[in-house]
Length: 68
Image 1 (cartoon, rainbow, N blue to C red):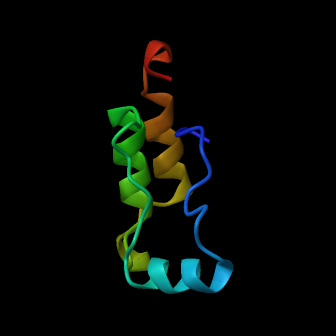
Image 2 (cartoon, rainbow, N blue to C red):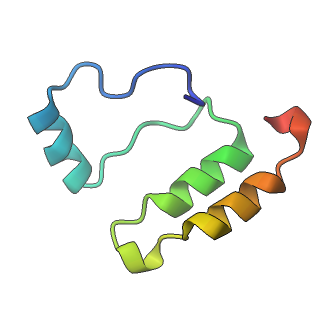
């Protein structure tokens, strides 16, 4: 939603699953930096290293309105 485009449009669900398992993620070049940081925190392959929803919401609340 933040990027305003559908990621991986050129892949079917099987290809997508395989690529995500290999660590492929959408480019965040056009994503506002504050949002990109939060997204990257959620993408770690190790679930123990990902931030939980409360922490993600705290980070989102700190983003200035003009950066949304």
